[in-house]
Image (cartoon, rainbow over all chains, first blue to last red; front, top):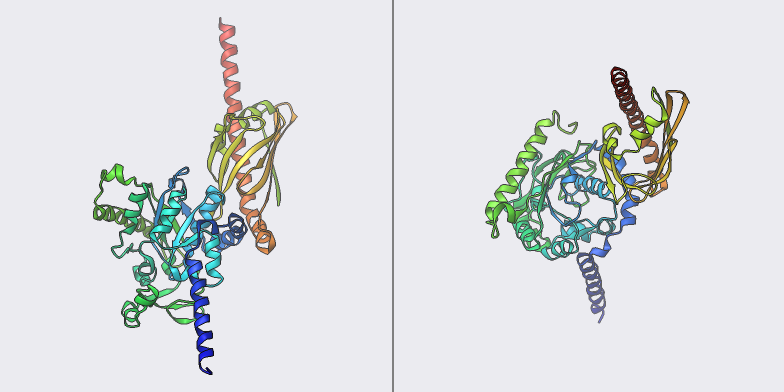
Length: 289
Length: 164
């Protein structure tokens, strides 16, 4: 009896945590709060304009009156500044009233405080169902097929689009009947010195099974110095961020009624790589841009 | 935050008005403008609506605006309906024949208040003022060019009438 009580409490605590996490992961489209976004815009504008000297080009390529699947290359470790900058640009261009959702890793959405802020800004935990639901509701959805694999790539691979062969986004666009709009960004991988994905370490610690994490990244980042995992984030260096939105790709029109997923994947990644090479050619110095 | 800028142009108020009342001209002289689209049935006049976007810092800001004053040939004023909260006005006054002062007034607020809102309003002041000055200089060039074109047209018509 003496030992049962703490066990019971531990079980209750675990149950509580599990319930909290499940609630956050099952968040709905209605968690997005336009007023919250409107109030966040001044901070985002200040940071984007003066700290990151950000530039977002060709937002007019996002269809104004119908949903679309926005496909981006993922950068910056767990501090994905380009996503925040893109959200600012989208909200000022189309107005906070237009629904817009992003998919993020379960861990980010379930995180206390930060997770709540992400959900209010329209972020949903990454799943095919959530994306489909948002597209059906008429909202553009931003996905990062490369996920944790791409965002933790070493800094010297910063100008490389690496979706690790993940093609689920193509099936998603086909099922929903929406165009793919590639969103290419540069500079995120210069916000810290990313050294290694630590894929072997993640596998050895079974993080892929326990937390859907295929990486345990190692970087040199402020204020930690050596930063393993990047779970608490880091203070990003003021790298210049440039984002370019490419013209929409109507899959059925360009690839026929039953497109070959591999062919579409090669086409989309090649287009994005070409655009990223163009952005890289404009940069003279790391961080400064 | 409210900013006022003005410019003197060598043209009568009617020429300035005719240029400013045509929504198609705005893309030619508004500095930093990336989008100007008529929304609704009326291209101009009281109640006309436009979707406008202007690049300020890292973002293209703007939204839907509605014309709330249309007093020919003196005043055009608008208010934002959605997007960034702002008001604007063209004040056109002919000081002496053929010499007109155009005043461009722009007032904006950053919803969200607090320290971030205040800092943003102040930080945005310099780029906004710079764009307003550039806008007025471009407007002056366009209007004076238009005035010279009208005068040349008149001279040609007069010569034609005398010759016949």
